[in-house]
Length: 207
Image (cartoon, rainbow, N blue to C red):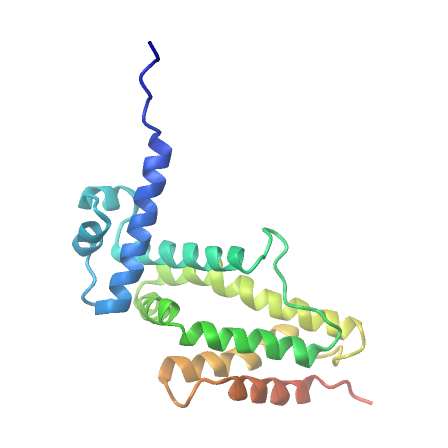
């Protein structure tokens, strides 16, 4: 007679976490952050409210982890290997930056990302700890990727070696996020290309 199978608690926990993440992202996109509650997330995920509070202190914390998980899965689907993230380096800085900024435009226009990103950005303004986690886990690593690509162009003589790579990065992505956040104009590939062209004028090597 075979031994009875012992349920795999870790697998059950992972299923619950995935259901909670999907529920949080879905509700925020459908009803907005203000109307999303821990109770609603628990109900949609098919778990008890205490299960959520055992792992997270608030709905904002749930949403942050759900968003980071979504970003990680998107990177994995795109073929990015862990520890090997980086901007493309074809030898043409302008072309590489256009590719990345266009992809950023597509992501910000994607309903899967739009509502959660807005919610986290707004909540991070009133919750410094959450804002710091969001910045450290997602925003800072992305900015560093841009800076490293610009530094590589500087080393190759394709960009002004005296330019501040981090400041140049903010000139690229700052206006993009400003237009997205405040809806001051259409967020398009043409706008992304114009940002690259304008920023690269400041990065052109001086004679």
